[in-house]
Structure formats: C-alpha cells, structure tokens
Amino acid sequence: MILSGKEILKQIDKEIFIKPFDKNKINPNSYNLSLHNELLVYENHTLDMKKPNPTQQIIIPEEGLLLEPNKLYLGRTNEYTSTNKYVPMLEGRSSTGRLGLFIHVTAGFGDIGFAGYWTLEIFCIQPIRIYPNVEICQIYYHSIEGEYDLYASGKYQNNTGIQPSLMYKDFEK
Image (cartoon, rainbow, N blue to C red; front, side, top):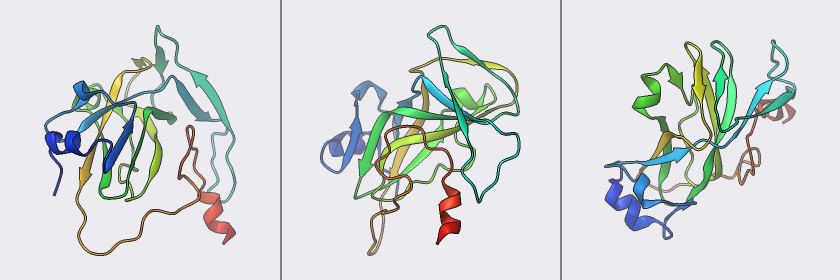
C-alpha cells in the first residue's frame, strides 16, 4: 500500500525523515525532491563493472546547464531521507519526463532502512537546460508486510554526496 501525502506528513520526524523538509512539496501520495547543484560524469567512454570508474565533477550554475543527449549524468537530491518502517521509492516527475529528461534510469527502488541522499541517474533524449534546486523527482512510500531486515550495505548507506557505481565491490567478495 502506498502512503498518502497526508500520511507522509503525519510520519515526518517520526517514521519518515526528510531533511530539509518543506510541507509545500507534499503531493497527494508523494513528496517532491530537488536537484543539488553538483553532477558527476564518467571520464571514460567505456565503463568496467569490475573496476572503479573515474568521474569528473560539474557544477550547475544558477543560469542553468545544458545537458547533452546520450550521456549519463549522476546527480543527487538536496534532501537526505531515511525510514526504518517504509519502503521508499523514487520516480521522476511527469513534468520532467514530458521534456525527455529521465531522472532515474533503473534505480528507483529503495530498501527499507536506507538513509542518505538519492543518487539520480540523469539521461536526456534531446538537449535540455537544467537548473539547481529544481523539484526534479518525487519520493513515495510503501508499507511492508512480514518480517524484514533493514538495509545494511556499506556501499551506499549514509552517503554524503553523489555515489558513482560501486558494483566493483561485488566482485571483491
């Protein structure tokens, strides 16, 4: 079951934590998250799952940044979120999707117990200018049935910034 916006609001600072929080960003069944002013891009054209892939930082200026099609940009939310009771999910806003801007290519499913900033996998169909602090995606919450363990991965938990893929650590086991 998906929590309503009113229920999300009731759970803020109890079972759902969003920092900073602005009640004006509550929707009927979600909460809008905004884009930080920093992006990462991979330096190499060919990426390797078994190795760390170097990245380069880009700052989005107030006047905006023109994104190139067919290039992956990693961004992050301004908001730090956590919950030990609900399953967080992330979706792009329909307004961004209608501009051909995809906010999370594959990783919109969060784990119960995740705490951190959301890394956004940003991809565009055609050139588009983006701006820092724009409400770019939305988080919503599912209740969970049965016994569960909290997310405990050391790869992405309690991150402080954009997280490039750490898949190479899976091969080190």
